[in-house]
Image 1 (cartoon, rainbow, N blue to C red):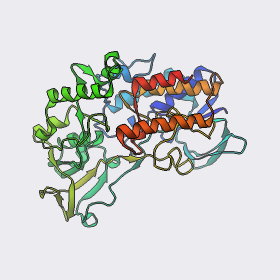
Image 2: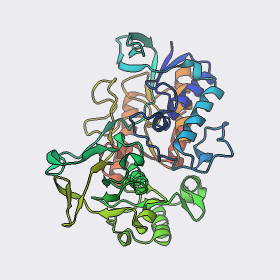
Image 3: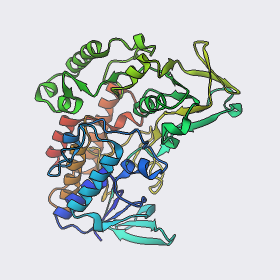
Length: 430
């Protein structure tokens, strides 16, 4: 077999479509019982990054695969179950369903002396199987291991309620009448806080550091449309920042007016939080903002401003650590934790190993996944080649240098890309 694709979510399906279009032999190994990635987890009640309140933050027209639009009757921002159904339909339409081995967990991926890749997997019956491939494409995403603060606040060991991570959250109705503190201000934090505010007895949002909260539309345009517009891409970064910051002042005013901390950094110097709902829920009293947690005592949660709340549960929406347990330790991260991939796809010094979908775009991810998939397929088919390893490492160093200057050095920052410039880079790569 020529190629092993690991994962049958949005990225893995895109890879399979590109391979199949060139007649390249492949097999896809998927741990879950069906295709769809995180989008099918909430309805199935499976533990994962998804939850029942999950919707797309990108518009359906720009999130759909090329040549396979989403149904006209879907809303602009479909919910998880609608997205899962779309991905299942795409798998059938693209003719890739028959090459997916569901219920199959990948245990290890190792490169052999002859350059081939040995993949050990375990099927639903528990039997292990070892296969050799010329190429391996990792398309499993990066929301894998939950990250909790270390250490937790003083008194956490004796807290009288439940301490959860957003990975364990599925439905606000599970907290009917309870007092819940949500920690964080990222996408999952604001979604979960808004969801809880309709079911919990009291919902508190604890925020340590301010982030820029951006509505899904500005001036009647979706953020995806803006990110792809020529007038936007012609702007310098500073011009883009001024445009967005002025638009946000008009659209929602200062975050301090909602009881939230103002960001200590300009927009696009860190990931933004996209939400149409959280500020409204705060204005309506459904969500109560508080600063960082200082300590816990019994069911009492004390905050750094001296205020306190009684709580039955704390939900930490503090993100994930990227992990690929089937790969050797550290892959594909370097010594400082930054992802080190040529054009964010190719592992230098490991010919035949590729990563698709391991990016965080300012805009929708689907066009990037499709372009990455096409590039990988061209490489596998021998239609294009790769530069020497030292040239690839120079490109990686330049990319990480630019990222550090803009976002600072962190694992997550190294995944950030701007849609249009990145698409141009991939197309120029051959």
